[in-house]
Image (cartoon, rainbow, N blue to C red; front, side, top):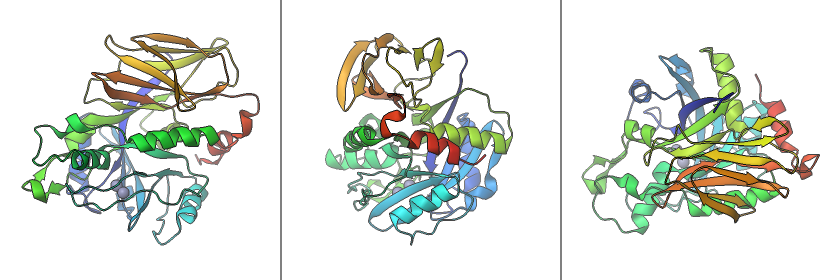
Length: 356
Ligand SMILES: [Zn+2]
Ligand SMILES: [Zn+2]
């Protein structure tokens, strides 16, 4: 993907600072062992991981907080400097994260809980909130536990990831939110490497396994330069802008897949506003990849392998790629909007408020 730099990383990781089973050194070592470019640790109501921010070898470690309340309304606050107390209301917590120049993502917004690990339902409940950056459309751990529970899987499968998939309700909600404004779709791990008592205290998702499974492929116009301040800004700005794809690398290495929009001799990244009609969306995918383009919650095009699609109407276009009949990649959308953004000013204000 010429002109762009791809960085592969994960977000939403728990350590022993909250209820993860690995201490932070162990978690960082696992991230380095699988060559992640970045990892964002988000412990429950805890910001101690911030003391470890920086480059550890070739892995950039960043830390935020999962603002955690009983019964749901969990929120990932990234790029913050100061602890946000869980006693705040959901709206106050979003405002607090934004006031610090940070990002706010609603975590596992449709998690119904699971008998496998004994989780109660922990969905996002307060949908009247405004001003958040996006939602987790795929939470590897909770979506997996929910799916194992719904399927009545009684004993530990040889590889539980054969049951992993994004949350269909969260995907529907994403399309609904996109119809109202700019919304980033996030893929998080919720990695805890927890032991599942009913399955003989087996760890079904060790850190290194989840770090290889579901990752964000972030596309940047300028390279990271091993400078914490500079690189943290680029990573968070890319996440806030949706310049990434959620890739289920467990199905197949997604490094060769790419997607861009071309218009008037310029190339645009996922998450960017194209701003006029007549753009082309171009994607390159390995043989055997099925792709569908979704706009307004409807499939507007489908095909196989590499693709080119001419946008002939204003809209918000996101692409899903499938392999072996399973979702492999979810790209953040291109925003093809009339001049002025059609009421979607947030996309501009967001970039202005993220503090460098
Ligand atoms: Zn949570
Ligand atoms: Zn979590």
